[in-house]
Every structure is written in C-alpha cells, then in structure tokens.
Image (cartoon, rainbow, N blue to C red):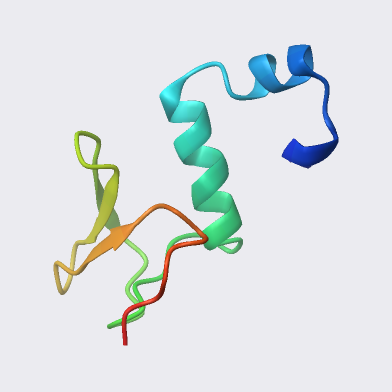
Length: 73
C-alpha cells in the first residue's frame, strides 16, 4: 500500500475512493498481519459497517478501526 502522505490528490482519490477503501487501509495499518483480537487473539471477526468496528467472533470484543486510537487495557 502506498504511503498516504506522499501521494498526489489523484492517487489519493483512486486509492481512497470509497469508505470501504479507507476502512481497508486503516485495518492494514492497525493489523498488518490480519485481524487479531487484543483480548483473546482470535482471527475471525464481524465488521459492523454502521459503527466502523470490528467485533471478534469468539469473545465479541469490539475494536475500533482507527490505528491511532488509544488502546484499551
């Protein structure tokens, strides 16, 4: 994935043309090796589109998509 800080406006619009494109990029930035629940380490999730959250299928912990968000302990 290209670095969002070093691309032109046209490149940015191509890569982040939809909300789903943005969510996919943020997911990659947070979980480079794929989703892993911080509570139970399970790798399968539900995506709650209306709230932009990932919910673990095992323990049901909801995880925010923003990679810059503070981590819960």
